[in-house]
Image 1 (cartoon, rainbow, N blue to C red):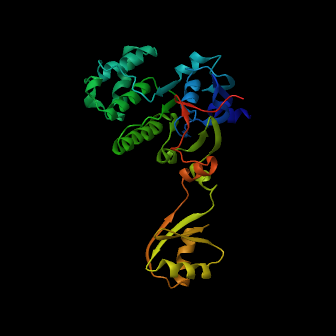
Image 2: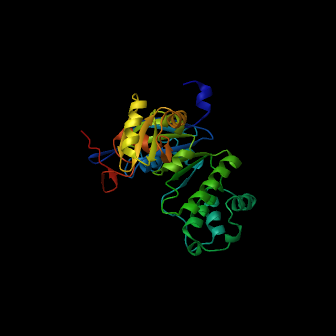
Image 3: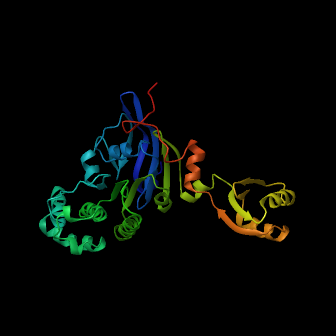
Length: 326
């Protein structure tokens, strides 16, 4: 790989593998993450997302392959790699009996910051995450969403070059999820941080610069959300009319090249360019339309196409992907 390209990489993964007894949790995955990128790891529970993050964060030893994080080999230079990253786990790891400030100070000390360095960084981080008024509150007094913001503030005290987020919004309400994303986008703008996100939520994957779809420990696709959605070339037009049977006959006669069918109370039309087709339908047919809905392909559709199942469907055994070692 070209040195200039190498210099622009925050993470480089080459055939990384993790085996558990009788199971391959992560199977020879390879990908790169650019500096400053929001990179999404999209897959259902048990797909291998957390296992991958734990290996990249040097918390779990790989069974094979290799990876570098900020240019550091995760096996040979694990301490250096660990110092340059921050991680927010699925479960809260704050000390409930300490205040917000005390939790942040403890983290700063673990990363070697002096008291003066901590003081200089404390207020900007609290302000960024709107935690100024929570500074002296103990963690057990806070809501789940606020605790998540404190965890993000904690990892930003030492200004990591890469932030790993392992399903950071699971269990949070929609409003809190939106706020968390507001903070994440501010963080990237403020610090230029690379963000590696695991998620099972399609709307979160849509925000990412690039997305890797992982299923049963394998990466089945990796690209920008828009490019991934181009893997399905057709839009879906849903029409409701005053007389669906009559409308179906007329539409099939006027547009014999299209796939047109009735499903329930609607007529469904597959079209390569739905916006262009809709005016033609209005112009060339006399059907009386009561409602129109144009649906673009989603990442959920792509996941279904690539894996043959919905992202919420998963076969698990004690939380690990069932992929037997043969």
